[in-house]
Image (cartoon, rainbow, N blue to C red; front, side, top):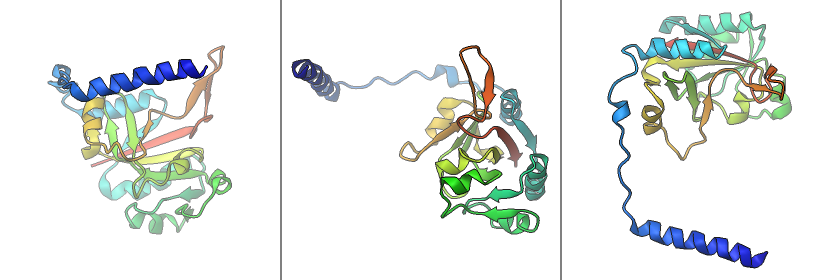
Length: 208
């Protein structure tokens, strides 16, 4: 068994040694020469909705009211609003909801949260995907996986045409989470079950 291991490791070392001396060819990006549509925001909203998520476009001053309305729609009373969101969000929401930032909250505490409210690092129009890198305003990864409802605010300026365009602006050193609709899986009989690996409900608010 050990000799086979050494053979494999030897081949890896050889490949790595050759890789250091080889120049990498540029990857052709001709397919990205044209935008998929002139209105990437509309395409993003369309693709997000195709994943059985709720999506709505909201004017900037109406964001907090829209968050509150979405929370009521999903019967959410206890909200996790991570530090780093616009400061008026938690202060205005706390009048009606129980609001926490989740800083010292363990998994059991997260399980008692009805909904998490976050911003987003990017949106991808062609796939209807939301990207979080868990910087301030987005909370740690567990905070967006355990609660049953995710209310996500996406700025139009952060919506990219396609995956390569989005990746070019992301920091690969950060913990990236790609979200395409509510969490869903299927068993061997293809029965769809939602909420197994993350939020059962995704509600996206798109703002200027």
